[in-house]
Length: 515
Ligand code: NAD
Image 1 (spheres, rainbow, N blue to C red):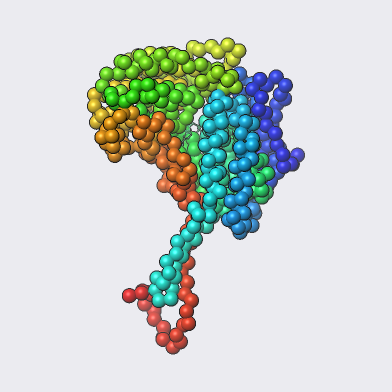
Image 2 (image 1 turned 30 degrees about the horizontal axis):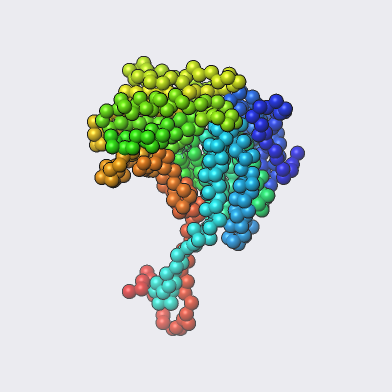
């Protein structure tokens, strides 16, 4: 079967749904895989099978790369204004299909519908940004670098690029990648998360409806094998990866060894430092939202709180507000947080919470045994708070990636900064204070790539870049913003001479200079 249309399941109840196989997208056609191996995509709120992804075969992968390679010359020669206009139309179509996209995200990933809208919207903003690519991709020009000689630089696309995605933002993260890459003139192979590929499929269909030519965007599916094939393929020039550290470092080294560019955004342990002078009400609200929102499955979730001074009054208020949160399927309008992605994810979260208890932390709130009426099979974990955590504990060292807030204590801002800086990750850190002096010190001394000052999840908008550091990032050009454009382009420098050349001045074999 080959066609230009594709439909994904977006119901949460699943009552009338038949199992649906997710096709590959190759050269502009959605094609069913010939693979004999499939993985179930499971609704984490009720365990129903939403769809099945194939382990795309090597032959199918090769045909996707060939399609992308063949689409590259005409696409790179398509005027930049035309490429921008495809994005302009694409952003309009995303807006029109916002509810449908969000429902698919909730069905496959579990987050609440409102949060799923945010997932789509933060990706949409990258598409909006790509609409101004001509300005972003501009080169530089210096006239008369020598007598009658000018030099200018051109930012050219690389060729075939690839993106490998995590499960936690099924719409936003694919949209961090391919809109920037293709508007620069590249063609693309996207590998969505095997846990929630639906949003990628819908977005690809919308991008083609917006006018993206056949072969400019291709989609393949699978896990380790397809990722390794992407790392090894000689025709792929650059890889964007977002996900965990083991996968990210493996991809970074394997693909770099093949001479590819890699940008790898990885795990996190984001700290919020709370000064005694912080506004109590807004700070507690921020901590609850950033600790438990999306069931803690955000790479910028504020999972660790460091109270400077007496933590007791803060913890009491935190408990009060966390207890009031409603846990249910993301499709229920009253739900504050939905399930975690899988049974294994729930087990990992529970194990890390237990390890904290075993090593002496105090369990202020325990959400591990929660049962959600109507969704008894869901992978739910209720808001959980561990107090008195110390840096040597496993629950502190490991990324929990669940609705678990870890509370620590420090006697001074210096001590708090030291705790944050000792942590291997460097994605984000936030300070809550009414003191400009404290926040400026924090901003200067903290070793994290994204700093919030009274802002809990400081994910920069697309005119800046996503700037995680230390173990949270490998590579040197970040996602989106100016760095994102640099990642997907290489510079050509042209030196030209247009003048009436004086004849008979002889030949000089010395290195040309303009002294
Ligand atoms: P994951 O690493 O398990 O999977 C990410 C992708 O890599 C998937 O497409 C998967 O198929 C592939 N993959 C997984 N293991 C692999 C291996 N050993 N070899 C080759 N490919 C492999 O990550 P996840 O569970 O989907 O996502 C959660 C993680 O992503 C968390 O660590 C989170 O902090 C991180 N994350 C980081 C950012 C960021 O911008 N820094 C954003 C979102 C998520």
